[in-house]
Structures are given as C-alpha cells and as structure tokens.
Image 1 (tube, rainbow, N blue to C red):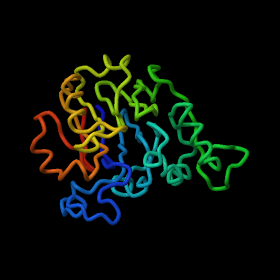
Image 2 (image 1 turned 45 degrees about the horizontal axis):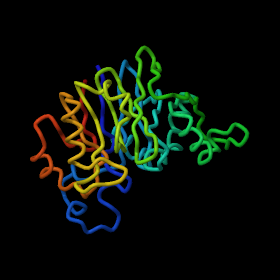
Image 3 (image 1 turned 45 degrees about the vertical axis):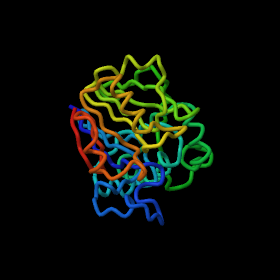
Length: 255
C-alpha cells in the first residue's frame, strides 16, 4: 500500500499571497491556506519526498518523520527545490540521502547548491546526498519497488512526473509527452496540477485539467499546485465531478 500526504498544495507564491487582499487570501478556511506543492510518500516502510520547496521545514514540522529515504525532484524551479538545505537534520542522523533527478535538474542544483553537491567546495556542516540521474521512461528502483518517470512539459521546460504502481504524481504540467499517455490510462489515483480558472502558458487551468482527466479516466483525481485564482476550496469542490477532488495541505490518501 502507498500512503501519500499532501505537504503543500499551493502554487509558487503559496496561498495567501503576501500582501494580497484577494478574498481567497483572506479566507478563514484552513483548506484555503496552501504551502508550496510537495508530497510525502510512505511505501514499503520507507519515506520519500517529491520536491522540497521553501516551505519544506514547516511541512515536516506539521507531518514529522524520523527518517528520509529519498527525495525525487520534478524540476528545478525554486518553489520545488529551495528547501534543499533543510534536509540537514536527516543527514546528521542518518548520513547521505539519495536524490533522484534528471541531468538537467542536477546541473541546475549543482550551480545553486554547489556547497552541497560540489565535493571540492563542500561547506562544513552541509548535508551530503547521493545523486541518482534518471531518464523519462526508464524505471528505477526504490528499495523493492519500481518507479517510472513520466515526461511532461511546463511551457518549454521538461518536468518529471512519477508513477508508483497505480498512482501518478504530475505537477506544473501544461501538456504530457504523448508517448507516456498510455501509462496514465485508468489509474486508481492521479495527482495533477490545476492552477486557476483562466488560461496560463505554463500550467493547466481548470477546464484543461478536467478535459485531460476525462481522457485518462482515473478512478480518483486530486488537484494540486492551486493558486488563489482558482477560487474558494469549498465553492470549487462543489462544482467538480464526483471523482475529482481539490487536495489540501495535510490530507492523507492511500492507494
């Protein structure tokens, strides 16, 4: 069984947005308060994180774990990587931590976090990691289980989704590489980003996300990477199809 906890379900600015007077940003409903998108996956007795953004520390204070077995990165944008240094407490307790990422993402992080990744410039006290370079379409092993990287596109930037048995996680998606669509048909659970009502050049909006869901026909879908411009959680939830749900921070699901 896979247990997935939504550590954050918001877009790059989070919700509420700093200084915003938008009604959703002023909402008292805790489901309208969204940290940057990330999930914790418990699978086969191990703990895996997908993306560690700037809210990583706060997210794991809300959902504590005593061991981190690996981080899987989707892409290099700051809202998905800026918490990289906050893995230090795990490193101090357990040693080097496996990370899984494409060469493109590794090269980006190597520039921004060279004091972690560059052995010749490693800062004393910085965490150590074991990079594992992955490719879309090539399965890799997490302990006794296998994960399939899925290629999608965030405007012109490659993003990596992950398929865990019958669950797929896709964030910051505008379109999916056609060669991978057959892997997404009739899933038990699809987790996919949905930014707002209006169209956006780099993200699915609600209309596009629902059209894709109708095409893929998962049993259940959870929408993530949500901005305040999608609307109030309860109002949007009331108009969604019966098998489509707005995820919210700290929600746990099982597959």
